[in-house]
Image 1 (cartoon, rainbow, N blue to C red):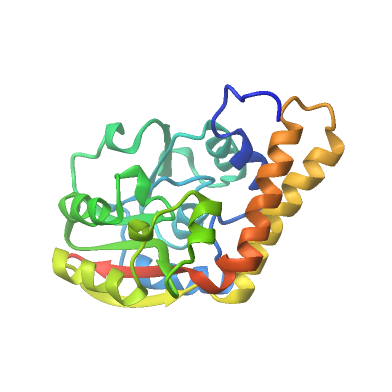
Image 2 (image 1 turned 120 degrees about the vertical axis):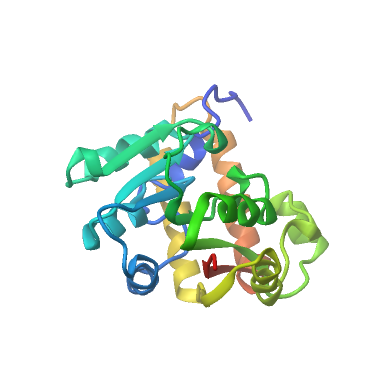
Length: 252
């Protein structure tokens, strides 16, 4: 392998260049979740997208309700893409390139928070639940999504993804953790195999096409090895082992 990127987000940016949502989520399921999340939001409400990526979900939520949106991420390339694709008024969407816990928060509590695949921005799933509970107004809603174990992971899979057994819990455990934190669980759902295959297929395809078009990239060999290892781990273990759950929660 050769070359070490000065940009720690470069691999992810390339691999996600064809993704609309940066998670295994279909448009139809996204719309169902957004319908539930955005119900009753007004022009006085502010919605936070924590670790927003390209802010696709936030932008689609703002298209169906009059609320304002705040997106926070540390990948500037994703935020640039979000700005390019946003067709609404600029005063309705603010995007901040900074660590989540350092973003300029609104004076009023948030009416809703999105955190889809980004609980690491808070430190952990439980930290996400606790912090969002503090940031939400009474009756506010949190749509949080994170991985869960469909079955106990093999040691080979954990080694391949550089993961740990305690990194995730079960789907039921995730919902129970939200209840224990004080939330009312409004609805839950999970990514199905087709959504996972679409996400992982685009992830691998985007990288391998990029490398075919840029054989002289100094990171080409390292990126190729990394992607092939990741995709084979998904096929061999991940598809049957790692799930992705969505939890729509309300602060009483």
